[in-house]
Each structure stands twice: as structure tokens, then as C-alpha cells.
Amino acid sequence: MSRYNRHIILSDVGPEGQNKISNAKVLVVGAGGLGCPVLQYLAAAGVGTLGVIDFDIVEESNLQRQILFGTSSLGSNKALAAKERLTDLNPTIQINAYQEALTPQNALSLYNDYDVIVDGTDNFETRYLINDAAIITNKPIVYGAIFKFEGQVSVFNYKNGASYRCLFPSPPKKGSVANCTEVGVLGVLPGIIGTMQANEVLKIILGFNGVLSGKLFCYNSKTTETYSLKINKSNSEFEKVLNNKENFENIDYDFNCKAIINEISIKDVSKIKNVHYLDVRELHETPKISLDNCTQIPLKELGTKIHEIPTDKTIIAFCQSGIRSNTAAEILQKHNITNCFSLKEGAQAIIEQLKTEL
Amino acid sequence: MQLQIKYFGLLAEITNCDQETLEFSKSQVSDLLKELYIKYPLLKQKDFKVAQNHEIVSNNSNITNPEIALLPPFSGG
Image (cartoon, rainbow over all chains, first blue to last red; front, side, top):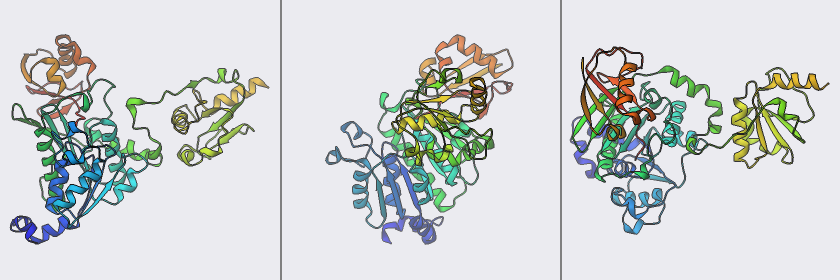
């Protein structure tokens, strides 16, 4: 244990604290500017199981700040390259490298294997995904984000505390915030913010008071000014996520490149030949639509029952009010069923229309 | 009241300053935003939260404290 001697001789850590660190399981999402220092310090500290997920490869322009990588890593997957470096740093810990993107489909099962999630991503889509999956699985997130010379750090969803959506309930308008790759950053800033994140992770593991929950810490590396914002918990933001829990895998977090959904009004449906209706309501919902050319698949089962939908027809998805059917149309498009529409009005309108056709 | 307004992230690029002092005679956050939108029209296209005394306030809150901050979300990493 001489490796951890400087931890153990701290009275607030001691052998018990080091044991907690050894038993901890931390998942770091993104092995970039923030993820690298987080991983480096957590591996050095002896976090027993360290997961790293990143689909991206190491590029030369990363090396200015992504300090786990060297020129020999160029072209390698970041999760793999990180694992290689971290194994040399500390061969006594388990490091799991996932060479993929975090998605609504893999997030919940991945989270189940870890105690703390670290947000080291560089885009809003994944940040909201990380947040919502953490609400559903009840895991704390250690959040960090940067813009040029400024950084933000916070801990969300910790011991019933505030979440990212309590601070920013919905993603910013497209184009209102520049994406990371479009702006520069002084390499040391993600180092500072990422190191603060690693510190918060260790505080959580060690059970220290004063975890940065319910507060957003802002740091400006140019002016050395700091600012701390209080974040109040909004229960309604939690409810929104939890109410949609069953449908989580079908949520489209890729809101910057949202698919274009074709909506159609019932009066225009009759102009289309070869229509096949897709009822995405739950089985108990009324009015019932019993038509030969209608298949009922509740929205949450749609992803697994795509094969039941005829591919040689024009699909008209409907629900009660035209909202779930929009999601259904998006799912169909993802599965390459592009000849599909979402009915604007809903089931009642189909009944009315059938009456007029008689 | 004399307000001390802090701008964060890309908002500071629009206003061309990290902070400024502003004389404010009306009452609500929405009134202040109207004045800021006239002074900095580009602010209107941006998403941000307004904080008073280090706490987020809504647009219809009254301004009772001179310390105001405008914070946008960051995505970089």
C-alpha cells in the first residue's frame, strides 16, 4: 500500500478511506480535455473500477490539452488509448474501455455497473442524456464544462440534490451556443476544471461534507475571478424525466440534427394510396380502431417490433393527440422506414373520417 | 439603483466586458432585460439564466439586490 501512503497518512482518509476508494466504481463519459485529467487522477488515486467511454479517435490537435495521449496514440480510439496509459500508471485497478458513444440504448445498463458518473463530454446532447439517465438510475454526476477561458463545475443528483435540468431545463436553441470544436481553449483550463471534477469524485467516495451539490462553481482563468451560483432543486424537472422513463431508449437526444417529421392531416390521408395505419397508443386506450390496414404497437415497444410493420405501404402513425406519433415517425425513420407520416389529429379524427366515408 | 452586472461565457463577448455598472430605475428582471436587449441586440438570440445575489431569478422577479449575473450554459470539454 506504499502507493497510497500520502492518502493514508491523511487523518481524513486513512486506510478506511483508501478502502472506499479501492471499492469505488466510476464511469467517465468522454476522454477529452476534461476526461483526461479526471481519469489520470482517479487512476492514480486507486479508484478500483474505472470505466471510460468514448467513440472518438486521438487527433494531433487534441494533444495540446488531452494529457493522457502522446504522438504514439494518434489515430487510436480514445477509450483504448486512455486505458493503455492508465494501466501503466496504475496496474492494480480495473479499467474498462468502451469504444462507443453513450446513447439512450446503452446508458442505463452501463450506469448500473458504476457508483459515480463523470460528465466530461463536449456537447449538449450527451450532457442532457447523462443527466436524464442519472435521474432514472439515481446516480450522482460530477459535471464540468468549459468555454474559452471559463469553466463550470457542479455535482448533480447527489443525495436527492439538484440536477442539470434544474439549472438549464432545456437545451439551448440551435446556433445560440457555439460548439466546442469551433472555439479555442487554453489547454490548461480543462486541466483545472477536470482536476476539480476528480476532487469532487473523491469527496463523494470518501463521504466528505461540502460536496459541490446545489451550487455551480464558475472559474475564469484569465481574470482569476470565481463565482458561485445557488441551484434550487426543481421537482418538476425530475418528474418530467421519470414520467418518460419507460420510453427512455426511444428519446432522441440528437436535437441538433433532428429528423424532419412529416405531419399529415386526416383530410389529406385519403389522397394517399396504400395507407397502413400504425396505432402507437397503449392497448387499453380508446376509441379502438379496428381496421384491416391497422397495426397496434404501443410506442415503448416500437423499437423491438419494427418488423411487424409493412414496408410496401405508406405508414400513418397515430396516437391520441399527435405527440407520441411524432416520436413513432422518428423511430421509423431511424429504422429506414422513410415512407411514413405522423397524424396531426389523433384516433378520434380517424373515426370521424370513417363515418363521412360511409 | 446602481446594478453591478456580470456577464459569463459568450455573453461577455457580446457585451465586450466581463462586468459593468448600470443605473436602473424600474423594478423587474424583465425590465432590465428589455434595457439590455436595446443596448446589446445580440443578447436576445442567446440562452442564459439571470441570477440575483447568486440565485437564479425568473423574469417577473423584482430586482432587490444590486448584484446581477447573466449565465449561459457551456458545452465544451
